[in-house]
Length: 325
Image (cartoon, rainbow, N blue to C red; front, side, top):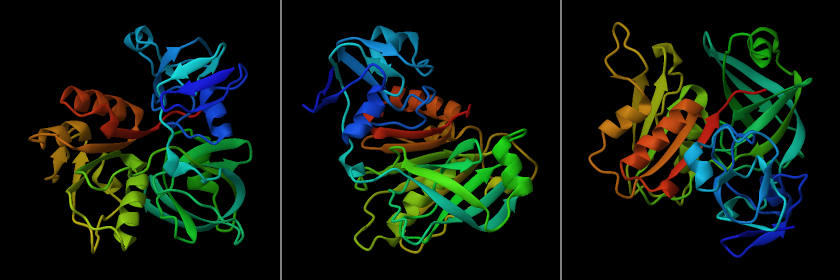
């Protein structure tokens, strides 16, 4: 079976392999994030042909299904098909690898947030684009974490939040020791900066600030980058002590809005949901590009609200933190 795209590209499809996995195996990269049907980042339109669901397309609405929307991470072809999907050429050559990694440094930034720095083998040649994530493998447990560092760093930095009864949380907060040996797999995901010549708004909740930190740090260190548009960051947390990153730069001019989800005594900043605060600040969204990372609920709400306000769908990019199974 052949899978065609509206860009006049084609690749082999198999009933046993999802459209996304077939594309990746052929060297093409489509939008994706969670790869388990929850986030909706890989949603596209099935223009011709028929598919079969390999797993539940949880992010699709009834209206999506009527419009022949599919999630490429969940479906496989049963005939030749054509889809409305764009190949992300910027990610060509970024090789997904499985590598050993040593815990190099452990810093508890608050009661429920830890910064972990991982050391890779000197010969690893691990390349990623700022905004991507890795899977960390500890025994039989695997969890995904966005990279908070830049590709030129010698270490991979992760920001990890504690979750009650989480297997990996128990490891990170009760068992981890310097020099522990883990494995990583990556880089993964298609969350990266596409266009620096437009006004940028970043929305983040919790440790969803990690890829934002990575992206902005890359701009700060890039000698060829000259800022010509506004950059604003809206970062939401539940408690004041969870704002563990000080977004101070020398070259970049960034406005950071720390947003608490509920009011607390002594807090003088914004209160509410980051997407609501960001929209309330906008007189217009002409030419705006939004990058959202964090809870799936925030991302789905933010996308809906920004699109209803006139944002072009192609100007909304996201990376959802979804439940691991």
